[in-house]
Image (cartoon, one colour):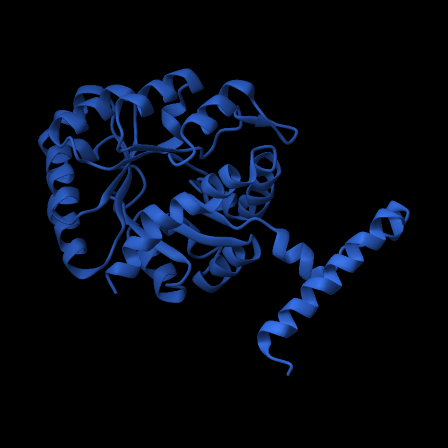
Amino acid sequence: MNTPITAAIRTRLKLLRGLIRCVALPAIACMLPAAFAAEAKLPIFDAHIHYSHDAWDSTPPKAAIAILRKAGLKRAMVSSSSDDGTQKLYAEAPDLVVPSLRPYRKRGEISTWVRDETVIPHLEERLKKHRYAAIGEFHVYGADADLPVVRRTVQLAKQHKLWLHLHGDSDAIERVLAQDPEARILWAHSGFDGPAAVRAMLKKHRRLYADLAFRNDHASNGKVDPAWREAFLEFPDRFLVGTDTFTPERWHYIAEHADWSREWLADLPPDIAERIGWRNGETLFASMMAQRR
């Protein structure tokens, strides 16, 4: 009987026989079957995508989703200025997009939002209307994390059981966790700190995670930096990759960045590569959206 199971076994055996033949053939004649190559391509959870108002015309929603799928992304956590961009993409591909609510309604609010009380009703209104996995990415440094607007944002995340995607220094992280010790924080760009400092923060705060967006010091020419390797091996469940499309032009870099990530991830043990490449994001963020359907 040619059941789906036996058919799958025959396909696997065929691929295996092809690989065995490759051992004895010149490299130029040894072409992996397309099905095997596709299967071997590591999925990517991109934890740092923006789709702000200045990207909508040059890259409409359908085109943006096509870029994400062509890059081989399993999911993308998306935020935008304004939040309408995130909602456009989520409506287009709810299987792919994990929405995060940014406090910014337009560009130029990065440094002013922490003192802008109108941000709070904006966040509250959006939280009532839409589903999210996180609040952010937002920028806050040092003592500004103790300002009333930021404090209320931390409270809203706690109330709605959301992550905080925080772009800031370690001082801001400490202050937010003093407000809510159970807050779950994704530290954007790993704070642009060195691996030793990042390891110290992850060791100190069990609910702190870090993305690697817009930095390349952790790998070069497909090889992981030794100090970063120690961090990845010590905390394989606490890192995620990300592109950071902070300008519209960077949308056309997403596929290139995904391939670059696959290259250096291949220098890690396979299970750790999978965790950092996509499993951590899937477990931490995509599962939240599935639970809220």
